[in-house]
Structure formats: structure tokens, C-alpha cells
Length: 199
Image 1 (cartoon, helix red, strand yellow):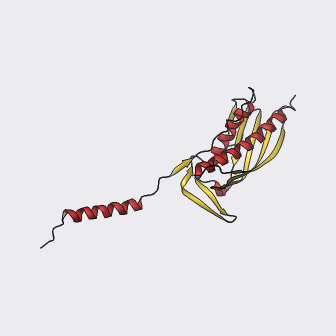
Image 2 (cartoon, one colour):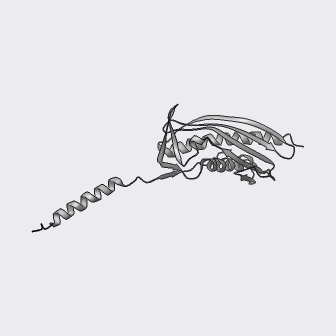
Image 3 (cartoon, rainbow, N blue to C red):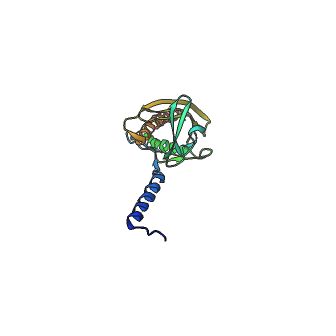
């Protein structure tokens, strides 16, 4: 004779299955962006600037935030990711910072070769973009500013290590944003210096 399954056993089975399924569920993925700086507002200008291309190291050119564990070891944070490709994030933030620093709305982003009709073009090669949660964000970037009208150019390097002030990956993204503000200010200073030499 077949055994009859009691309601209590049914409830126990349902609870066990629900617990197993809950244990198998993946954590929610969190997405982060970099932010522009609002600390500097310059007088209005008519300068036009093209930002790009931006090159980032292959090791961090991925959606996952890459965490530095040691000089020879990193960890990919599967559930903590950049909202868009890192080169696009960097280009967007630098462009936004230059709008404020130079007082011009005529700043564009260019993924390939820079815009042909811009007064100034800046390309950026990021050589280090290190993330150490709870400690610091490190940026090392070489940039080249060109003035197409007379082929004048200048090359600079921005190296900075910004301490993380807030916990979690929000704090890390904020530290990277401050590092990019420093990079943007160096580029803005170079634009002013080059503009001062124009006829």
C-alpha cells in the first residue's frame, strides 16, 4: 500500500527546496561610475577641445573592477562592475572636468582619432589604474595635447595616489574620480599655456 504524504512532510520538502534555491541564487551585481569634479568653474571661453582616444591597460579593460591584492596578484570582482567601458568613463569625466576648468561647452569625446575641427586635441594613455579598496586609487597617465592649426604639441604625465575616504566600492570610485580631476587639471593648465603662445 502506498504511503500517504502528510501536509507536514509537504511543508518540510517545500522549505528545503526553497532553502536550496536561495543558496544557489547569485548576489545582485552592483554597477559604478566615475564622477566629474565641480570644484572649479572658469570664466567663459570659446575654445574647442577633443578628448580621445583614451587607452587603458589590458588588465583593467574589462567590466569587472580589478582589485590589486599584491604586486603580482589581482582579483576580478564579478559582482562589482563599471557601468560602461573604463576608457569611456575616463573620457567622459575628463571632458566634463575640462568644461568646468576651461569655461567652455565645446568639449567633445572621440573614441578614435580626435575631432578634426577642434582647437585642441588631447589623447590619453593610462598606464596604471590600480584599485585597492579601503586604501587608495592609483593613476599614472601620459597625455599629449596638440593644436592642429600650427602642429604645436606638449606631452605630460600625471601620477597620483588618492586615498579612499569612504568604505566600499563607492569610496574607491570616488578616489578614482579625484585622481581624474588631477589629470584633468594638468591638461587644462597645458591648454592655457599653449593658448598663451597662439598668435
